[in-house]
Image (cartoon, rainbow, N blue to C red):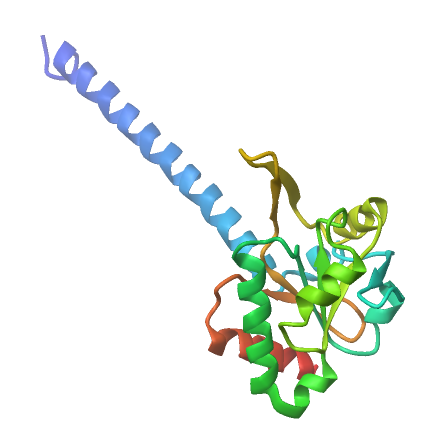
Length: 212
């Protein structure tokens, strides 16, 4: 029997083909993951015009003074929008404190920027509660709340993740999107500042936003 037709050679060929298939499958898997990661990072960094166009829409809520705020109030100036809640144990107070520090660093340019803190927990975050809570941060930060239906409409428009999480003591907390949305003078999403992003990176993004 020749080497060409030997069982050993056939087994070796089959093994080689299996290895090739595994390599091809692995390469495809890596490519899929890479494409997904690039798409996600692009959205986080500003996203394509198609992705940005899906963020935003009509809403009607109230600020901590009880005055009505709609999507029209986002036009004519750059804006930062952060979604959270006043009973948040860490992410929200940390982000609002960092925002306060960024506004100090911006100096007079901070007055060109509107900053909004939108609750995902309107049942507890009344205008009075929002006013008391925001008293610990920069006074230019505007708190937004409303009925459950009004807030849900805004969360849907901005594609914000939010979920009530029951606690063992019968109370609850909220899971929610932790990024700050950056909107230009036409109320279009231009990027985000991610939770715990370095001060240098965050300020660079915000300065670009203000500069237009």
